[in-house]
Amino acid sequence: MQFIRKKKLAQKILFLDGLSGSGKSLVGPIITSLKKSEYWVYDHLFEEIVVLLANNKIDLNSAQSLLRIHADMNIYNLTIGRNVNFRPNDHSGVDYGVMRKEFNKRLLIKDGDQISKKILKENLWLPIMSHNILIYSNYLKKIFSDRNIFFISMIFLFSKSASMKCI
Image (cartoon, rainbow, N blue to C red):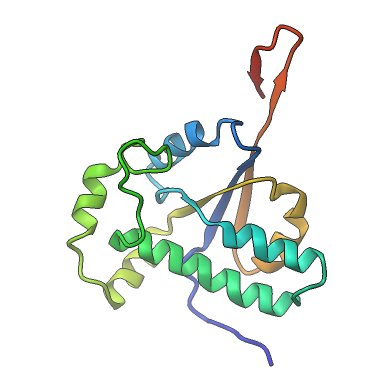
């Protein structure tokens, strides 16, 4: 049996990828401050499902069904302010970027079909922060074959003087 969902809310997905400490939380707020971007999320399910697929523990159709609907749920939930991190000292929280006022407004929005229509009209990027998912990009391309996906990979190098360089 094949599961197909016709409506695609997250049509453009951007994976902001790299090791812990590579600068993703510095770049995330910059990306989400752009006009055509939604707020970034860290959602470990994307990493876990793609590893299962790569190790033949789940089939492609199941991975597609789970992650496509999960991406759509992420962008819908962000649009209404659901499951958002309001912890003031957390780098993944809305206080770290420039979105606090926007999310305060979103908390008052009523959910429903008008939200889906708004998402489709605005066609925003869904940035997803990940850890080393780039090596599975061929699987992600298959999973999201019906959408546009992009990758930003954060890499840092240590020199002999122990200073960090971002490339």
